[in-house]
Image (spheres, rainbow, N blue to C red):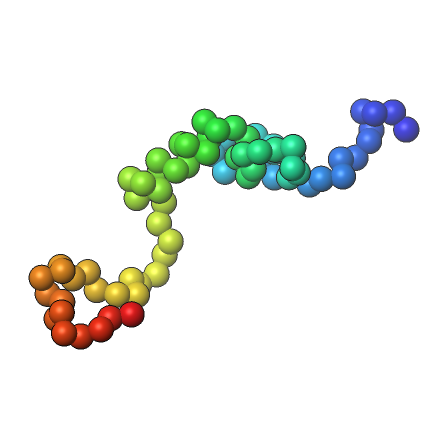
Length: 74
């Protein structure tokens, strides 16, 4: 079998940012991203709330002045 026909031991996944195939192995330091650039683009999307996890918030937004300091919150 030639090296061209050899199947990789590691699965390939698409980069979430650019869709380029990324080998899922220890040799891919930015996995699931193909590069640090794609990783930082994705991080920026989360930071500007471009990506959101659907669902209802688990808590209401409150200001610290609204909290009762005598009650313990966990």
